[in-house]
Image 1 (cartoon, helix red, strand yellow):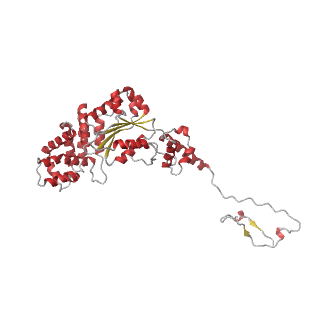
Image 2 (cartoon, rainbow, N blue to C red; image 1 turned 60 degrees about the vertical axis):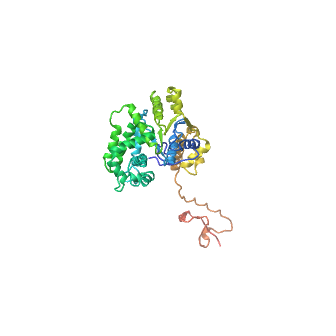
Image 3 (cartoon, helix red, strand yellow; image 1 turned 120 degrees about the vertical axis):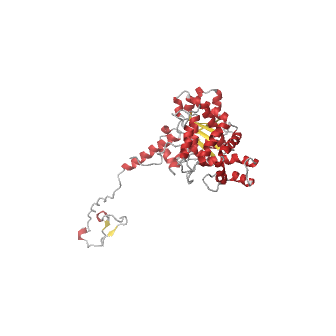
Length: 426
């Protein structure tokens, strides 16, 4: 079984914080993406084309860093291509809903959709309370609670949340007014907004430990035979509602499968273009390699669709020698330059995955070399030859016996026959 070493991980998953990181690698691309995405919630989004010269340049690593950095103010939605090459209204809606249904830590079963629903209901109810359409004993206090404490105000599971319980009892009428208010803010059709308001309200009002909560909303999203146009309108409404509250970033990574279907790239470009025309306050990132872009996308896109997909282009660059050292240091601190000297630079190329793969080979080769070196053993030195006999001196056996003193070079613990001694005559 191969021993563990710091260069085993060659691939990363989008959204998982990187275990090792070198700040200098892809620094320019990181700063560009961070600046593009760091805009107020009400601003229109853009389509960002993130390209790499080849696979292994760290696109997923870079996107995970951006998500980790901006996670408090942005919602990142990884898009999963059905059959490896299909991204459409149905798959994106499913990706968004699955992201919203992810359970929050230490929340008692609540998920992001609970918080989103409460904030949406509070935002839509404020103008109704302010105008007097919804009667209230203390209007100023109610508006303040809706504005500053929406999560607590619409806590359907708390016995003292009077506003939430009143809304549940009157939802048949209130739901229509909430839908109309949100549709005006999103500038989208009321019908599709009402579809989500009804689903969100029933989900949020159902006890968190009820098994029907998840089943009801997933059945509604996946069930039925809605036409493609209806699914597109519902997706636009869902995005429009979410982007009232936060920045939303759709991330399409791992697009290699699009090179297998000559129409897949064209369909994706047309889909994103239509979605952007319906609702514009979201960002989309297409992350792909240059060979896929040139073979699957460019030959099939019109100039207009090409311009829309490449509204902003961020290109990753080959590693410099200093960046190689920094990358190796991030996994093996203090050994960067030494490892780089052992690595076959020609095979490694100038991309992160190739460098890490060659570093793993160098590391394993060094370990194997150490393993075959025999252990050093204590071997008694050969006995010293007899000293030559000289005239006028008696034989050693004829000398009187004297105490034996160990030589200074003798080490403690050696066996007696391995010790060197001097016999000193009087």
